[in-house]
Image 1: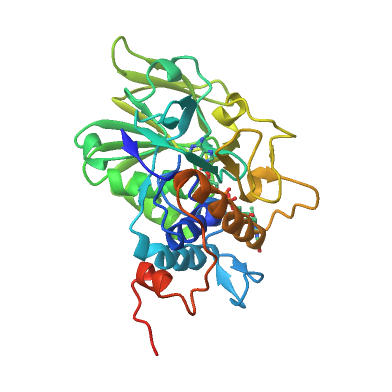
Image 2: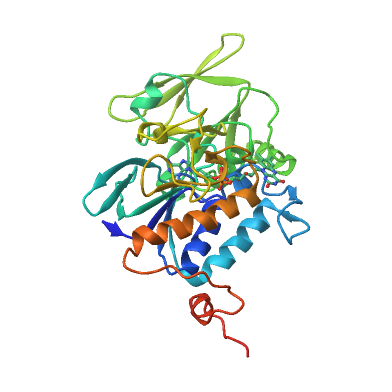
Length: 340
Ligand SMILES: Cc1cc2nc3c(=O)[nH]c(=O)nc-3n(C[C@H](O)[C@H](O)[C@H](O)COP(=O)(O)OP(=O)(O)OC[C@H]3O[C@@H](n4cnc5c(N)ncnc54)[C@H](O)[C@@H]3O)c2cc1C
């Protein structure tokens, strides 16, 4: 059980920046994200694209923005809990209880939902056996590549993830790469490498094929693939990996008793509190008259939500507005030397 001042749901740009705003006023935050990396849409959807409307940064990329935001929150030494979705929240005597899909539990007087358009979830196999074997032979992400050592691994997909993992895993396992088209979508350089590895007999490629079924009792023993002409092949397999991209789902947020308006959470613009005391929503997920789904709006929303969190986290203290330029307290929290 982790006790903290604020649990932030979502490590997108807005979720990261609010950690800085909370840290400046002396509040500790724990951030949870479903993805295996920090940065939300900026990192998942457009890491290399230029962004031109972040104040005082004439141009940056999704990746460089994330890197700079992380640099800015370094002094506050907060924790990120990745690869897990916040599943449930409930009201307890000493605050909100927040539970994740990895069975982590937090207790906090405040929750800030910075969940964007919902959690990014992998697009899954549609064959019925896939669910039965999920995380026991069927995977959509890789936490530890050593798990696949010396196994028979069938990898599905034609994008960068499928190609990159096929190249990497073929170094220590028997890999078959299956894709529904003859051409791969991933980087040309990676396509060239997999074709070369096939020529060298280091991996097998099956195109244009799709998964038809997964066989096995307690664990996966083989898969059956099928092409458009009805040709069927059975491949002995220990592990099946699917890399079909991500979809965005509001997910469990819809079940937390919050008012919703077209997959967004209405808030008041004074504190960004939702219809529940101590639960705030900022960034793309919140809605109010005039809302702009821009990163800069999320930063402002976070600044106000952070101040509102102070009241519940420090009920016996008075919040004092201060500038970072002149406040000794804020500069101490930032770990910078005050210049005279
Ligand atoms: C192609 C593209 C270009 C864009 N260009 C610009 C631009 O030039 N300027 C601009 O200002 N904006 C731009 N945007 C919009 C901008 O990316 C979003 O406004 C911004 O990412 C919103 O940030 P956020 O932190 O609110 O949410 P997100 O970035 O969506 O992050 C939310 C995070 O919450 C996580 N999450 C959700 N639910 C849960 C849960 N239950 N448990 C755990 N984690 C959860 C998600 O996995 C995700 O990582 C662009 C968007 C796209 C798609």
